[in-house]
Length: 384
Image (cartoon, rainbow, N blue to C red; front, side, top):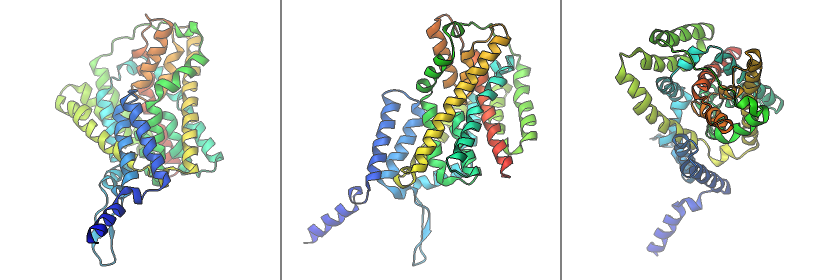
Protein backbone atom coordinates (compact mmCIF):
# COMPACT_ATOMS: atom_id res chain seq x y z
CA UNK A 1 0.00 0.00 0.00
CA UNK A 2 2.80 2.41 0.88
CA UNK A 3 4.42 1.71 -2.49
CA UNK A 4 1.18 2.60 -4.26
CA UNK A 5 0.89 5.82 -2.25
CA UNK A 6 4.47 6.72 -3.10
CA UNK A 7 3.89 6.07 -6.78
CA UNK A 8 0.64 8.05 -6.67
CA UNK A 9 2.38 10.99 -4.99
CA UNK A 10 5.15 10.89 -7.58
CA UNK A 11 2.64 10.87 -10.41
CA UNK A 12 0.73 13.78 -8.90
CA UNK A 13 3.96 15.77 -8.75
CA UNK A 14 4.67 15.36 -12.46
CA UNK A 15 3.95 18.17 -14.88
CA UNK A 16 1.37 15.97 -16.66
CA UNK A 17 -1.00 16.40 -13.71
CA UNK A 18 -0.61 20.17 -13.44
CA UNK A 19 -0.46 21.55 -16.96
CA UNK A 20 -3.38 22.96 -18.94
CA UNK A 21 -3.93 22.73 -22.71
CA UNK A 22 -2.46 26.20 -23.11
CA UNK A 23 0.85 25.06 -21.65
CA UNK A 24 1.09 22.34 -24.29
CA UNK A 25 0.40 24.91 -27.01
CA UNK A 26 3.22 27.11 -25.71
CA UNK A 27 5.56 24.09 -25.46
CA UNK A 28 4.82 23.42 -29.13
CA UNK A 29 5.51 27.09 -29.99
CA UNK A 30 8.82 26.86 -28.10
CA UNK A 31 9.79 23.79 -30.10
CA UNK A 32 8.96 25.59 -33.35
CA UNK A 33 11.17 28.52 -32.29
CA UNK A 34 13.98 26.10 -31.47
CA UNK A 35 13.58 24.49 -34.90
CA UNK A 36 13.74 27.88 -36.64
CA UNK A 37 16.81 28.85 -34.64
CA UNK A 38 18.76 25.61 -34.90
CA UNK A 39 17.69 24.20 -38.26
CA UNK A 40 16.98 27.40 -40.19
CA UNK A 41 19.51 29.65 -38.45
CA UNK A 42 17.01 32.43 -37.68
CA UNK A 43 18.98 34.54 -35.19
CA UNK A 44 19.85 31.59 -32.91
CA UNK A 45 21.61 33.76 -30.30
CA UNK A 46 18.19 35.27 -29.52
CA UNK A 47 15.72 32.53 -30.33
CA UNK A 48 17.44 29.63 -28.54
CA UNK A 49 17.39 31.22 -25.04
CA UNK A 50 13.93 32.76 -25.61
CA UNK A 51 12.47 29.46 -26.76
CA UNK A 52 14.09 27.54 -23.92
CA UNK A 53 12.79 30.02 -21.34
CA UNK A 54 9.33 29.58 -22.88
CA UNK A 55 9.72 25.81 -22.62
CA UNK A 56 10.78 25.93 -18.96
CA UNK A 57 8.02 28.20 -17.69
CA UNK A 58 5.28 26.18 -19.37
CA UNK A 59 6.57 22.93 -17.87
CA UNK A 60 7.41 24.37 -14.45
CA UNK A 61 5.55 27.68 -13.90
CA UNK A 62 7.13 28.17 -10.46
CA UNK A 63 10.44 28.99 -12.15
CA UNK A 64 8.95 32.50 -12.53
CA UNK A 65 7.25 32.57 -9.11
CA UNK A 66 7.61 35.71 -7.01
CA UNK A 67 9.00 35.42 -3.46
CA UNK A 68 6.32 35.14 -0.75
CA UNK A 69 5.74 34.67 2.97
CA UNK A 70 3.52 31.75 3.93
CA UNK A 71 0.94 31.56 6.73
CA UNK A 72 3.62 30.50 9.22
CA UNK A 73 5.68 33.59 8.43
CA UNK A 74 8.36 31.63 6.57
CA UNK A 75 9.90 33.45 3.62
CA UNK A 76 10.17 31.57 0.35
CA UNK A 77 12.50 32.60 -2.46
CA UNK A 78 11.17 33.26 -5.93
CA UNK A 79 11.92 31.20 -9.01
CA UNK A 80 15.29 31.46 -10.73
CA UNK A 81 14.05 33.25 -13.84
CA UNK A 82 11.99 35.70 -11.76
CA UNK A 83 15.23 37.32 -10.64
CA UNK A 84 16.49 37.44 -14.23
CA UNK A 85 13.23 39.12 -15.22
CA UNK A 86 13.65 41.79 -12.54
CA UNK A 87 16.79 42.90 -14.39
CA UNK A 88 14.59 43.43 -17.46
CA UNK A 89 12.04 45.44 -15.47
CA UNK A 90 14.80 47.61 -14.03
CA UNK A 91 16.11 48.27 -17.59
CA UNK A 92 19.54 46.88 -16.66
CA UNK A 93 19.79 44.14 -19.28
CA UNK A 94 18.46 46.20 -22.24
CA UNK A 95 20.95 48.98 -21.45
CA UNK A 96 23.85 46.51 -21.26
CA UNK A 97 22.77 45.03 -24.60
CA UNK A 98 23.06 48.51 -26.10
CA UNK A 99 26.58 48.85 -24.73
CA UNK A 100 27.52 45.60 -26.42
CA UNK A 101 25.93 46.69 -29.72
CA UNK A 102 27.89 49.95 -29.58
CA UNK A 103 31.15 48.10 -28.93
CA UNK A 104 30.49 45.78 -31.89
CA UNK A 105 29.34 48.35 -34.44
CA UNK A 106 31.29 50.61 -36.76
CA UNK A 107 29.54 54.00 -36.92
CA UNK A 108 31.85 55.07 -39.77
CA UNK A 109 29.26 54.64 -42.57
CA UNK A 110 26.83 56.92 -40.74
CA UNK A 111 29.52 59.54 -40.12
CA UNK A 112 30.66 59.36 -43.76
CA UNK A 113 27.09 59.77 -45.04
CA UNK A 114 25.03 61.87 -42.59
CA UNK A 115 22.07 61.74 -44.98
CA UNK A 116 21.59 58.23 -43.61
CA UNK A 117 19.98 59.85 -40.57
CA UNK A 118 17.01 60.77 -42.78
CA UNK A 119 16.47 57.15 -43.80
CA UNK A 120 16.82 55.99 -40.20
CA UNK A 121 14.25 58.57 -39.12
CA UNK A 122 11.88 57.63 -41.96
CA UNK A 123 11.84 54.00 -40.85
CA UNK A 124 10.47 55.11 -37.47
CA UNK A 125 7.16 55.83 -39.20
CA UNK A 126 6.23 52.26 -38.38
CA UNK A 127 6.47 53.03 -34.66
CA UNK A 128 4.19 56.06 -34.75
CA UNK A 129 1.72 54.34 -37.09
CA UNK A 130 1.50 51.39 -34.72
CA UNK A 131 0.90 53.72 -31.78
CA UNK A 132 -2.25 55.17 -33.33
CA UNK A 133 -3.42 51.76 -34.54
CA UNK A 134 -2.99 50.37 -31.02
CA UNK A 135 -5.11 53.22 -29.63
CA UNK A 136 -7.80 52.40 -32.19
CA UNK A 137 -7.66 48.72 -31.17
CA UNK A 138 -8.43 49.62 -27.56
CA UNK A 139 -5.05 49.84 -25.80
CA UNK A 140 -4.41 52.76 -23.46
CA UNK A 141 -1.75 55.34 -24.30
CA UNK A 142 1.12 53.78 -22.37
CA UNK A 143 0.37 50.27 -23.61
CA UNK A 144 0.09 51.55 -27.18
CA UNK A 145 3.46 53.29 -26.87
CA UNK A 146 5.14 50.16 -25.50
CA UNK A 147 3.66 48.03 -28.29
CA UNK A 148 4.55 50.47 -31.05
CA UNK A 149 8.33 50.17 -30.49
CA UNK A 150 8.08 46.67 -32.00
CA UNK A 151 7.98 48.54 -35.33
CA UNK A 152 11.64 49.40 -34.88
CA UNK A 153 12.52 45.67 -34.67
CA UNK A 154 14.42 46.51 -31.49
CA UNK A 155 13.95 44.02 -28.66
CA UNK A 156 15.99 45.79 -25.94
CA UNK A 157 14.23 49.12 -26.52
CA UNK A 158 10.83 47.38 -26.45
CA UNK A 159 11.66 45.84 -23.07
CA UNK A 160 13.12 49.11 -21.80
CA UNK A 161 10.05 51.18 -22.70
CA UNK A 162 7.55 48.59 -21.45
CA UNK A 163 9.31 48.60 -18.09
CA UNK A 164 9.50 52.39 -17.87
CA UNK A 165 5.82 52.79 -18.75
CA UNK A 166 4.76 50.16 -16.21
CA UNK A 167 3.51 47.68 -18.82
CA UNK A 168 5.17 44.62 -17.30
CA UNK A 169 2.12 42.44 -17.99
CA UNK A 170 2.60 43.07 -21.72
CA UNK A 171 6.40 42.86 -21.62
CA UNK A 172 6.54 39.17 -22.54
CA UNK A 173 4.36 39.32 -25.66
CA UNK A 174 5.97 42.62 -26.73
CA UNK A 175 9.51 41.30 -26.32
CA UNK A 176 8.80 37.97 -28.02
CA UNK A 177 7.10 39.76 -30.93
CA UNK A 178 10.00 42.22 -31.27
CA UNK A 179 12.68 39.53 -31.17
CA UNK A 180 10.67 37.28 -33.50
CA UNK A 181 10.44 40.01 -36.12
CA UNK A 182 14.15 40.76 -35.67
CA UNK A 183 14.82 37.11 -36.43
CA UNK A 184 12.47 37.09 -39.41
CA UNK A 185 13.94 40.19 -41.08
CA UNK A 186 15.36 38.08 -43.97
CA UNK A 187 11.86 36.73 -44.67
CA UNK A 188 9.64 39.78 -44.08
CA UNK A 189 11.65 42.55 -45.72
CA UNK A 190 12.63 41.25 -49.21
CA UNK A 191 9.05 41.02 -50.62
CA UNK A 192 8.34 44.60 -49.48
CA UNK A 193 11.66 45.81 -50.91
CA UNK A 194 11.03 44.20 -54.29
CA UNK A 195 7.43 45.41 -54.41
CA UNK A 196 8.39 49.06 -53.88
CA UNK A 197 11.47 49.22 -56.11
CA UNK A 198 12.17 48.60 -59.78
CA UNK A 199 14.97 46.36 -60.98
CA UNK A 200 16.74 49.44 -62.30
CA UNK A 201 16.64 51.02 -58.85
CA UNK A 202 17.91 47.85 -57.20
CA UNK A 203 20.90 47.86 -59.54
CA UNK A 204 22.01 51.38 -58.60
CA UNK A 205 25.65 51.36 -57.52
CA UNK A 206 26.62 53.89 -54.89
CA UNK A 207 29.93 55.69 -54.71
CA UNK A 208 32.48 54.45 -52.21
CA UNK A 209 32.15 56.15 -48.83
CA UNK A 210 34.84 58.63 -47.86
CA UNK A 211 37.39 57.57 -45.25
CA UNK A 212 36.44 58.58 -41.71
CA UNK A 213 39.20 59.82 -39.43
CA UNK A 214 39.81 58.42 -35.96
CA UNK A 215 39.07 61.85 -34.45
CA UNK A 216 35.61 61.86 -36.08
CA UNK A 217 34.89 58.38 -34.75
CA UNK A 218 35.90 59.40 -31.23
CA UNK A 219 33.94 62.66 -31.28
CA UNK A 220 30.77 61.13 -32.75
CA UNK A 221 29.59 59.15 -29.67
CA UNK A 222 30.46 62.05 -27.37
CA UNK A 223 28.59 64.63 -29.47
CA UNK A 224 25.56 62.38 -30.03
CA UNK A 225 25.31 61.67 -26.30
CA UNK A 226 25.42 65.36 -25.42
CA UNK A 227 22.93 66.44 -28.10
CA UNK A 228 20.38 63.62 -27.73
CA UNK A 229 20.49 63.37 -23.94
CA UNK A 230 20.25 67.15 -23.50
CA UNK A 231 17.06 67.15 -25.58
CA UNK A 232 15.64 63.87 -24.23
CA UNK A 233 17.38 63.03 -20.92
CA UNK A 234 15.28 59.88 -20.52
CA UNK A 235 17.16 58.30 -23.44
CA UNK A 236 20.42 58.37 -21.46
CA UNK A 237 20.32 54.69 -20.37
CA UNK A 238 20.01 53.49 -23.97
CA UNK A 239 21.77 56.14 -26.06
CA UNK A 240 24.39 56.66 -23.35
CA UNK A 241 25.27 52.97 -23.14
CA UNK A 242 25.24 52.61 -26.95
CA UNK A 243 27.65 55.49 -27.34
CA UNK A 244 29.80 54.40 -24.39
CA UNK A 245 30.28 50.99 -26.00
CA UNK A 246 31.20 52.66 -29.29
CA UNK A 247 33.63 55.00 -27.53
CA UNK A 248 35.31 51.94 -26.01
CA UNK A 249 35.72 50.61 -29.54
CA UNK A 250 37.01 53.78 -31.19
CA UNK A 251 39.20 55.45 -28.58
CA UNK A 252 41.80 52.70 -28.82
CA UNK A 253 42.97 52.84 -25.19
CA UNK A 254 40.54 50.40 -23.53
CA UNK A 255 40.87 47.26 -25.63
CA UNK A 256 40.00 45.04 -22.66
CA UNK A 257 36.72 46.90 -22.06
CA UNK A 258 35.85 46.70 -25.76
CA UNK A 259 36.43 42.96 -25.82
CA UNK A 260 34.45 42.42 -22.62
CA UNK A 261 31.49 44.56 -23.70
CA UNK A 262 31.28 43.01 -27.17
CA UNK A 263 31.93 39.39 -26.17
CA UNK A 264 31.74 37.99 -22.62
CA UNK A 265 29.38 40.58 -21.13
CA UNK A 266 27.21 40.73 -24.26
CA UNK A 267 26.68 36.98 -24.36
CA UNK A 268 26.01 36.72 -20.62
CA UNK A 269 23.37 39.43 -20.91
CA UNK A 270 21.81 37.74 -23.96
CA UNK A 271 21.45 34.51 -21.95
CA UNK A 272 19.82 36.27 -18.99
CA UNK A 273 17.58 38.49 -21.12
CA UNK A 274 16.58 35.78 -23.57
CA UNK A 275 15.63 33.16 -21.00
CA UNK A 276 13.76 35.67 -18.82
CA UNK A 277 11.84 37.09 -21.78
CA UNK A 278 10.91 33.59 -22.88
CA UNK A 279 9.88 32.71 -19.33
CA UNK A 280 7.43 35.62 -19.28
CA UNK A 281 5.31 33.81 -21.89
CA UNK A 282 3.34 31.44 -19.73
CA UNK A 283 0.12 30.19 -21.27
CA UNK A 284 -1.96 32.44 -18.98
CA UNK A 285 0.00 35.54 -19.98
CA UNK A 286 0.42 34.77 -23.67
CA UNK A 287 -2.67 33.00 -24.99
CA UNK A 288 -5.18 35.85 -25.08
CA UNK A 289 -6.61 38.36 -27.54
CA UNK A 290 -4.26 41.15 -26.48
CA UNK A 291 -1.27 39.03 -27.49
CA UNK A 292 -2.74 38.38 -30.94
CA UNK A 293 -3.30 42.11 -31.34
CA UNK A 294 0.29 42.84 -30.28
CA UNK A 295 1.71 40.32 -32.76
CA UNK A 296 -0.45 41.75 -35.57
CA UNK A 297 0.41 45.35 -34.69
CA UNK A 298 4.10 44.50 -34.58
CA UNK A 299 4.00 42.99 -38.06
CA UNK A 300 2.11 45.98 -39.48
CA UNK A 301 4.49 48.42 -37.78
CA UNK A 302 7.55 46.59 -39.05
CA UNK A 303 6.16 46.49 -42.60
CA UNK A 304 5.31 50.21 -42.53
CA UNK A 305 8.76 51.08 -41.17
CA UNK A 306 10.45 49.07 -43.91
CA UNK A 307 8.23 50.62 -46.59
CA UNK A 308 8.74 54.17 -45.28
CA UNK A 309 12.52 53.75 -45.36
CA UNK A 310 12.40 52.52 -48.96
CA UNK A 311 10.04 55.29 -50.08
CA UNK A 312 12.30 57.95 -48.60
CA UNK A 313 15.21 56.16 -50.25
CA UNK A 314 13.43 56.48 -53.61
CA UNK A 315 12.84 60.19 -52.98
CA UNK A 316 16.49 60.73 -52.11
CA UNK A 317 17.51 58.73 -55.17
CA UNK A 318 15.49 61.08 -57.40
CA UNK A 319 16.85 64.17 -55.65
CA UNK A 320 20.47 63.02 -56.07
CA UNK A 321 20.09 61.96 -59.68
CA UNK A 322 20.17 58.24 -58.97
CA UNK A 323 23.17 58.22 -56.63
CA UNK A 324 21.34 56.47 -53.77
CA UNK A 325 20.00 52.93 -53.97
CA UNK A 326 16.54 52.91 -52.33
CA UNK A 327 17.18 49.45 -50.89
CA UNK A 328 19.36 50.89 -48.14
CA UNK A 329 16.28 52.66 -46.74
CA UNK A 330 14.89 49.33 -45.52
CA UNK A 331 17.89 49.09 -43.19
CA UNK A 332 16.53 52.05 -41.21
CA UNK A 333 14.91 49.63 -38.76
CA UNK A 334 17.02 48.81 -35.72
CA UNK A 335 17.88 45.18 -36.47
CA UNK A 336 21.68 45.57 -36.60
CA UNK A 337 23.29 44.25 -38.77
CA UNK A 338 20.62 41.90 -40.13
CA UNK A 339 18.66 44.59 -41.97
CA UNK A 340 21.83 45.91 -43.64
CA UNK A 341 22.69 42.38 -44.76
CA UNK A 342 19.23 42.00 -46.30
CA UNK A 343 19.76 45.23 -48.27
CA UNK A 344 23.04 43.79 -49.54
CA UNK A 345 21.44 40.47 -50.43
CA UNK A 346 18.52 41.93 -52.39
CA UNK A 347 20.83 44.34 -54.20
CA UNK A 348 23.22 41.50 -55.11
CA UNK A 349 20.32 39.48 -56.50
CA UNK A 350 19.72 42.26 -59.02
CA UNK A 351 23.43 42.77 -59.72
CA UNK A 352 26.03 40.42 -58.16
CA UNK A 353 28.68 43.16 -58.44
CA UNK A 354 26.65 45.58 -56.31
CA UNK A 355 27.94 46.04 -52.75
CA UNK A 356 25.51 47.91 -50.51
CA UNK A 357 26.41 46.55 -47.05
CA UNK A 358 28.48 49.48 -45.79
CA UNK A 359 26.06 52.01 -47.30
CA UNK A 360 23.15 50.23 -45.58
CA UNK A 361 24.96 50.27 -42.22
CA UNK A 362 24.48 54.05 -42.08
CA UNK A 363 20.65 53.93 -41.96
CA UNK A 364 20.88 50.81 -39.80
CA UNK A 365 22.86 52.57 -37.06
CA UNK A 366 20.67 55.68 -37.46
CA UNK A 367 17.65 53.42 -36.90
CA UNK A 368 19.03 52.23 -33.55
CA UNK A 369 19.44 55.83 -32.43
CA UNK A 370 16.05 56.77 -33.89
CA UNK A 371 14.23 54.00 -32.04
CA UNK A 372 15.84 55.04 -28.76
CA UNK A 373 14.78 58.63 -29.45
CA UNK A 374 11.22 57.45 -30.18
CA UNK A 375 11.19 55.65 -26.82
CA UNK A 376 12.48 58.79 -25.10
CA UNK A 377 9.79 60.84 -26.81
CA UNK A 378 7.05 58.55 -25.49
CA UNK A 379 8.52 58.71 -21.98
CA UNK A 380 8.57 62.51 -22.19
CA UNK A 381 4.95 62.58 -23.41
CA UNK A 382 3.80 60.42 -20.50
CA UNK A 383 5.98 62.21 -17.96
CA UNK A 384 8.11 59.19 -17.06
